[in-house]
Image (cartoon, rainbow, N blue to C red; front, side, top):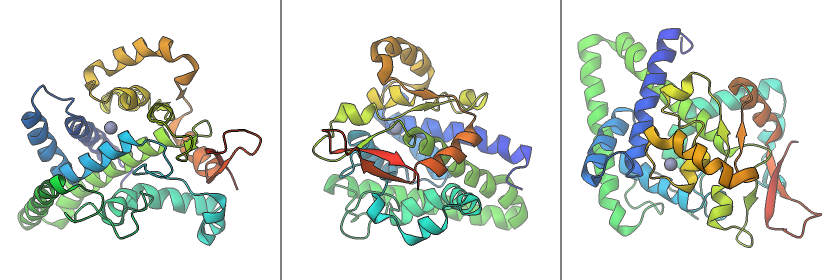
Length: 299
Ligand SMILES: [Zn+2]
């Protein structure tokens, strides 16, 4: 059902709205912080995303991109830390299971349990104001984010009473699940590629991390997603450029970045399958003097 053209269309358009919410979190949507936060709060809450909580953890991701010690998400494992189930799933059916699991449950599990996130030494999630993800002054806004999600859950309950479970599921809940799937797919592909190194504290610098991301080509969906898909390198360098100037800015910095600008135009489903097969764990390049630089390997 989730592949029905109407559902895909709804999810794509809603993902475009989610992208606007992300932009609000970067104070890139308007000149006024209040407008950004109100628009972002409404859009993200309606799409089951805790606006301020995610805004702050996402800010930390931007500040620590590809740092093995401090990045907030998509932290790959060393070979010695690979779990037994990863080895069991290293085959085509296991890869299908992993991709479906990642796309459907990846975002809610990240919000609820910090899966694949930074190790805080204790349980961390996006709904607990006392979570170690947040600083003291951010805690009240985590509560506001929670109130936004609770309000949308209550609105969903009222909608179910008015329209029925089947209508709400097909017209709202499945399209929102589609948003989460698109969001995970886009960001997974931005941060997972054989050409993208990760760094430990001996080698990491902000600029190295920011340049260790890659643009992707989602075809006609690039436009629906407000070009977030193929302007991600730029976004990590200058995150306050709004989507309606992103392509122009990307084209301006490409000649300056030269070989440091990366884009892979492999068709998305092929790329998703290839990265799930090739980017399993990371190890440092033993022949290099840079022992703190890690590269993806397949099993
Ligand atoms: Zn961002």
